[in-house]
Amino acid sequence: MSVKSLPFRASSANTASSVAEATRSVVREFIAARLAGDTARLVTLFAEEVDWLLAENPAVPWIRPRSTAAECAAQFTELMEHTVPEDARASVDTFLVDGTDAVLMGHVSGTVRVTGKTFEGPFALHLTVEDGRITRHHLYENSLSIARACAP
Image (cartoon, rainbow, N blue to C red):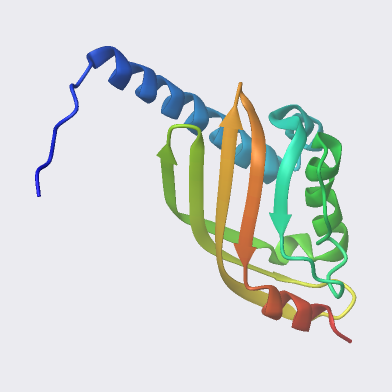
């Protein structure tokens, strides 16, 4: 087996680094806006059309299909309406960036307001940032734990 090495170009590395830093910056703004509950800022961070993926779960009122910037930003407000804000916890253990893609991994927990039941589990969030706006939001989480907490 032979392996050919590709020519390394400093300008390519600089461009890739710039794209990754731009992605990292937008994702940091996204996290800050989520923490602040700033839905107006979240709307500006999402693209007009977003590739949104969060496993549909009819038992969970804040989990539903979304595709516009306003719908995506509203997810935070809906989550806060249905959960106890003081009990909401999220930690990010890993923050990876490769070009326009970012992956956050961590742990989330909370309490559903109407049932008083708690949920918890790991999550992974895959975001893509293009032209300074989030075009992909794919969230993978412990949906079973959340559904159980929503059940009467």
